[in-house]
Length: 494
Image (tube, rainbow, N blue to C red; front, side, top):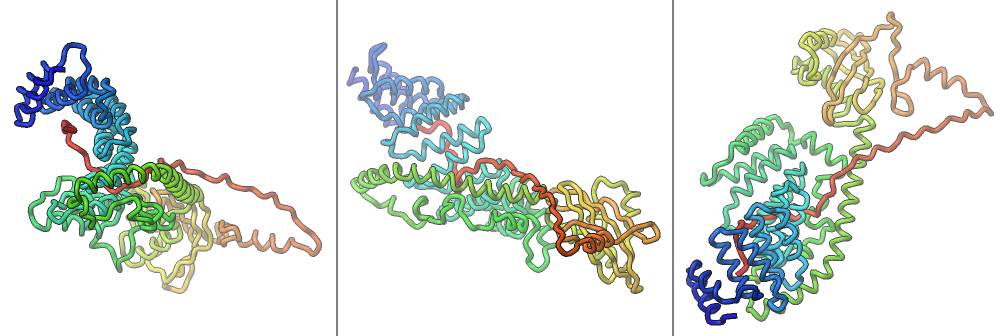
């Protein structure tokens, strides 16, 4: 290697003369010569000039020099260059190699670049894993940026409840001087997606409070929708979505997606910890050695946490799936029927409870069948199934009379909508059903007949039929970080 040309190249690079540095460095080694130090610096020059494919080739040449080392930094820079050159798959391979260098002092940089590469190919799940790893890396001085990216991944995966937790934690780790308005705006969108409208209004209000941040068109529409929805909330009751999630044991705040075992602090640095900015170089070296030992220990712990979190998600998904398959929802069929009669008697909006596929004539027919005034409604039986149900009830009219009805409902998401209403008259052979011991509707006469058949000393053997448990596949949950931040393409390790 021509040491004089190499030193001249380094001096020009420090002074910002990138082209001069390249000219000197090109003379620092002979054709075919391997020199990690020369190729590393030459790759940095090419990155600054936007010649990403050539930069990636230089970093690849530097990796061939085993005596030079710096594998993590070179593989990370090569991955960034390939990503900027529009080759995300090759970038992922290079960045994955960088993660295996345990001596690399700032692994969070690799994880952020890896997250960006996965997003380029549309893999939000693995991108979220990478941003989570970046957020919990103790060497990361700004985990809030990675947490924001993690929240975005959760939104893409349709997990707004986890996105809320990621954005909220990002706010905890952002400094007072940092612009938090963008984080509040993203938090507002996550709250709307989770059907938590009052909290969404509050988040959007924070984002626009000082007048320096303009909401996007999407956020503006969500803000207005949240304001309208919040005005209809009565008595501070939780939304239907929140109640359904709570019934399934999910989204209740019982666990932190970044710390499912509830041991925050072991995996995430404290936002009040500012020691990173005041320690000496010697202390940083010692701390880095301790961190390496801890990371090796946490790898094993991380696997256990992943299995634990996956098990929780499978259980929650199984409970939700079984309830859905068995015909349950929120609100329940009984509640929908009772509200139907109440709205009719009070002159309210009955049509909001009717199935959207009904014609105007069918909707009017249902309104005509319903009594104009009732004092009470008693549900006497329910036949449930996954997609449709039938409710039998008796309404007490204001004139002290009673009328039985058979009401057919169709599934609408997790709730139910009325598809038809028919009055039941004894003259038509109708028998008011009652609720049997198993919760399904049976005729009153049939039930009495069954009860009268039992005699002393006789035993009837019934065949037991078990319904197959419905297991709903759940998406593998990554362990939540709270929000990952994306690094700009084209940045390099000096």
